[in-house]
Image 1 (cartoon, rainbow, N blue to C red):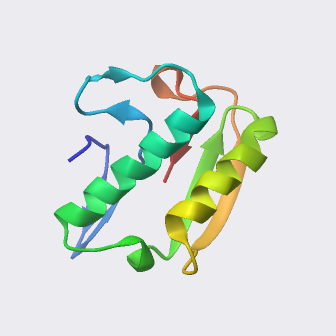
Image 2: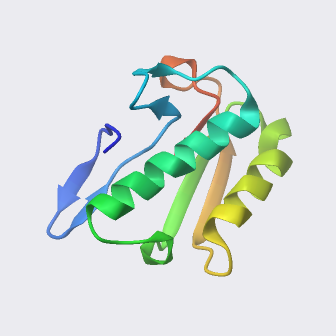
Length: 105
């Protein structure tokens, strides 16, 4: 399961996912679509580990280093969640840990 600085409350776990790839233990090359896809793969791995799927997510907060990346991210996000999209907030931030371009809470 991808590492995360998550908090557990009763049966829920709340935390963030960035594009850190468990297999390489390093940040992926800054190819935006690859990074965005990796973040969502990390989300899926966390869900599988707790016997859940994307339809169990109620809300996400997306942190983008540049709001100019929103359209590309929105396409990857829509493909990942399909018909059952959670509520979402998306904000531009000056900097993310490890130089990431995107992070999802």
